[in-house]
Length: 256
Image (cartoon, rainbow, N blue to C red; front, side, top):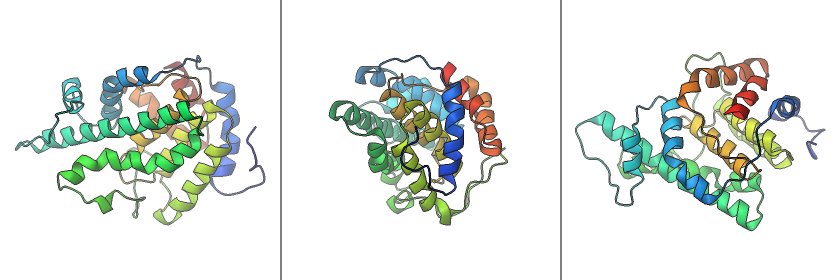
């Protein structure tokens, strides 16, 4: 049941209400408990694939380097290598924050949706903190949602205007908090974040973090979306964005 908001209207809520039925019919992921140790052990493969999906040419060796306690900003004339190092380090820092959120949900009996709403922006700040510390961007650039249009490469979907993001994100968190199915929270939590595209950059990484918090606290395993299925993954999100059909995306995540 989709609690308490059956009579509410808006843009996200009616779409969520319609698409949740598709998720419930198509979701067939095998339940599996995920421990903190499981999450820690999956970092390297998760970081490599998530960043590769975003088009970053990271290596597994680089991922291992940025996870070191004695990591420091790479001082090099190779701008691309330095950028990749900062991106990978930011993913590591954000991943630690996400893991801490999962621990709080699991050990304190907190609501996964409420924890995400309260700590969501902290993940994003950590993702870009290395760039702030390197003096490349300002902290004010990463606090809050985007204030300009964005366009998704090779997509017919145009994310909503920046003036609508606050209202859409309020609806988004309302849907998460009122959704009883962990599967629906995971699938639609991922999809609608990419649909709204509240940030200038990093939306895909944030969406996969939301999905995995919902999965790991809802009785399922952390799911790494491999870069080898990037084409199918993007096509399934596109189909959901244009035709409100989330079935293909649900089946893809279920079968990984």
